[in-house]
Length: 333
Image (tube, rainbow, N blue to C red; front, side, top):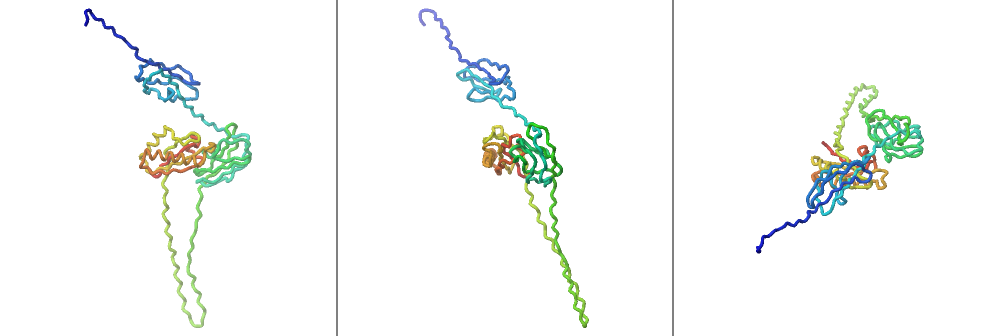
């Protein structure tokens, strides 16, 4: 302390704060959320989306390096923040309209076993590309059948017994006359076994009286025991996972589904590929099945899992995923 009173004045440095700006992205409309500036190093909660984009659903906010959902925590860095909305396209429903310009003259065969697995031929004139065929309400999309100018061939799936309608579609024109196919239960042939009596020998006449021979007893056929058929364990579909074109990458939203199988014992995963996919083949479908098997074993090491390839064979369970999928089945109870 000197010889006079002392006055101490506080000196201040500004605390760094940064602004938060929300953008809707191309094609969007609406009023952007507002948020007060935040001090560097502190956290804030990202706003709920207030933008709209026709044909799309809001997904997340992106700052250019990472994505954040609405109402997520964000730590303010050393610069202003711009959060841009990311969108996912809404699925477009496929409207099937029966063909007008094509004609059908006949189908062959007109009846078959309920087990399916055999070829059906639709004869006629088909000048336009066929988008789909329905048999008894089951849809066979393009790629699951072959088409020429005079006929269409497809392999029928299993179906309950009875008459079913067959419709052909190209997505543009009114209906062709409905064709009728009959699913029936085949009756196995009855094989009859034979058995008989040993002929009674005819006595030779003689001057000397000959005693009448006794009839040889007829042997009773011994029934062959019928073996008890082995009952194949029932497989129940418990999940379907979709893939993008040509990809074997499992979507992140499938993890919760795969974790739910920890109470299962035996699982069969069958991969499929879209016939119109340039990379869609047997090998791609097998790689998809193997990728799901690998992740399932990582999540549930006790599972007994078999991976199979379904190739480009159409599976109705994959209809909403354009046949780019893996079908997961539980074997047994």
